[in-house]
Every structure is written in structure tokens, then in C-alpha cells.
Length: 546
Image: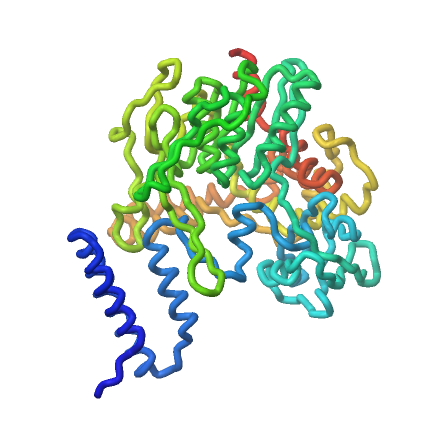
């Protein structure tokens, strides 16, 4: 008698039961499922029997699960029970010390870059610029940010010893830290940004649990302080909880207003979200700032307020994520599956999903819906809006792009070293938003950059080199060589010293932002950055003109 694989028996029984209970169309699906599960089982059994090395069932199955889910869409995924990413993603909370770190190439160690105000690392006396030497006696030399972060995080209430090297100290410093539940700040800063027009401003970084309460509190506080216009900044906000988006929208529209609807395959995924409480204000002029990276819940708020003609949307067309995920328990080990279960529709009836993940070949990018195939919808006052491709702003602003060199120099170790040195030699600075470095300070920064091994990888020269290769393959290089050489010589003439002069007006605000963050935490860095934010200035003007 032949021994049967228990997995085969289970699949056969399940398939038979499904076929008996389901109608014809569902039976076809069940048959395909049974057939392919058996194929998968047979392939794995052959590998397990004949492959030259022993396979890990856990690793193989996880790879198979990840591969299957990647073919569906970027938002559907499996999270094991021990994975904290899902909790951090949905709630903004994690067990840790409240510090952001980066890798310091020269020291081959991680360095503390930023602290959350009032969190364990801050309270224990850790400083930005501290080089992490060891964690609980384990040397961290050569370890990357993911390895070190994993050691810094852990169960709230646990204590460990962090040993750091601080600029100006001859000896390492040992600091005992007790981990706590860390809540990343959803509202890093808010306040009156323009006294003349009485314009209040609030930056919302993500839609985590409780952020609607923070927005409400900040709005009421600014209104009491004399705010007459309000700017909600959702630029680069990736989204989060739909319920928080509904509550934030409900702050500015009548109670019971339809904010968003979800429609999926099952009745349980079809739901109308109504604004749940009385609004705080339905008359004050509002502008919502968005960017191409504003997605999901950000698009619910901006799109709904646009559909209600309640706010001016300013910036760039948003990302276009009009699909909703829900969390389901799977397996016996406490794992979770985040599944795309529905599409959402704004009050006008439009869905702003930009990408069609159903119509793509394996491994290829999703198809983007062309503007010519979108449909017209109308706001409450009859203005035309369209579905597909994100939320189109009422006032489109150019992207405040920075030259590659500015990104490269501010991300370099030499810039970090300069900020560390500045903070160590200046006990105090002016308030955030009013702080400025001197010409002598910038000259010192430039000298440090030029004395270092900093180089800015020119993307233009790299692209030109690739174009040379293509021209050579097509037999066009010889006749175009002089033009290629001339263009390359012109591009290479832009050396680092010249770039530091040319981009002075962009680099100085970036340095000031990093320095302000050292003294005033995330809120200070953001406030300093706003002082040179051209898009914010333009939004204030647009809101005032209306």
C-alpha cells in the first residue's frame, strides 16, 4: 500500500467539500485552487526529497507566501507574530527609546541623529551626535542601522546599558535606558505662521491612532489665539487609518456628512463613513497642501474637502491610492495578513486609484490610468473633478526640487560632523524659525567639505556615459564624439567648490534646519524649514486672496 502525504489528503478532502457546497462558478474556482495546491505540494515534496541540500520549510514557505503576495499589489502582505512593523504602521507605536540613528561611515558605527522629545533616550541624557559603541556590552562596530535598531527596540519596561562616545569627551559614556512604548509624533508642529493674515498652520505626518484629537486640539488652540485662516499640510503624508481621516474631515463639515465609501467583494467591506460629530468650524477659509507622495488617508481628507468645496487644495497631484486594506489573523502562530479588501469612493462618487494591479505581467509595473479614460464628477457647488490618478489640486504649485549636489552634501558625514561641532560649541541658538548661521559659519562649512573626501555623484554625467554606450552600439559615436566630449567637459567643470558657491542659498537653509533640530527636536527642525518654504508662502498668498 502506498503511503500518502498528509498534505495531499487534506487538500483532496477540502477540495471535495468545497465542490459539494459551492455553485458552479465557485466550483471552478475551487477546482483550480485544489489543482494548484496539489501542484505546489508535489513540487515542494520533490525538492525536499531530491534537492542536494536540506530545505527549511519555514524559509521556503515564507518565500512562497511573499512571492504570491507581491504579485497582487504592494499593500497586501504577511506579518509574523514577532514582527512589530504592522503595529508600528497602524498605531505609530513601538517599544524602544525614541531615537533615530544613521550609519557613520568613518567610524563604522551608528550615530544618534535625532531624538523624540521626552522619550527614554532624551530623558536618560543621550545627545544627537553620540556614537553608539555598545548595547548591553555587545560591540556594534560594523553593524548597520537595521541591526542596531533591532537591538535598541524591545519590550517596554526592559532596561539596558548604552555606551556612547560624545564629541568633546575623552572617555566613553555609559547610559542606562528603560524602553517605553514610543508614539511617533503625528503633529510635529503647529502654530501661527503669518501674523499679518492670521494664518495658522499644522503639519500632519501620518494618520495614526489619536491624530484626529491632536488636530482638533491644535485647531481650537490656534483659533483662540486669533487664527482666521488655516493651512493643513499633508505633503508626503503616506496615509494610515481611514477612521482618523474621517474624523479629521468631520472637523470641518456638518455632522452626518458622507466622507468616504468603501466597496469590495463582500458585504462586510461595503461601508459608508459619515462624519461622526459636530464640526469645530464650517466657515473658516482652509487650504490643504499636498504633494505627489500624499496618499491614501491624505487623499480622503483632501479629496473630501475638495468635493464639499470646503477647502482649497494646493500643491501637486496626489499619489492615487484609492484602495483599502484590512487586517486578518492567519495561522496558529499569531501572524497577520494585511489584505486589500475594497476601493474607496469620495463624496462626489469618484475613486482616485491611479494604478491597476490586475492588468500587468509578472514582475512588471502596474498600469496607470491615462487622463483620457478618466470620468467627470462634480463637487457640491458644481465644479468638475475627475477620478483616477489622485486628487488634482485647485492650485498647482511647482515642485521645490533641489539639485543632486545639495542632497548629497547634506546627507554626507561631513555635514553631520559640522552640525555636531556647531552644536557642541554653541550652548544656545535663536528660536526656531529665527535662527541663521553667519557668512563665517558657512565659510567654515565649505572648508570642511573641501578638506573631506566628499564627491557628488553627477547623475547627468552618468546618464551621458550611458548615452555614449548606446550611440556606440548604434554606430553613431564617431560622428558625435566631439559633441559628447564638449558636453562632458562642461559638466565636469562644475567642481565641488563652484557648487558650494552656486547652491549657497539652498545649502544654508538646510544646515540651519539640521542645527535647529538639535536644539528644538523635530518641531524645531520643521519650524526652521518652514521659514524658507516657498510653497508655504505661496499657499498663504492663495488663501489670503480667496
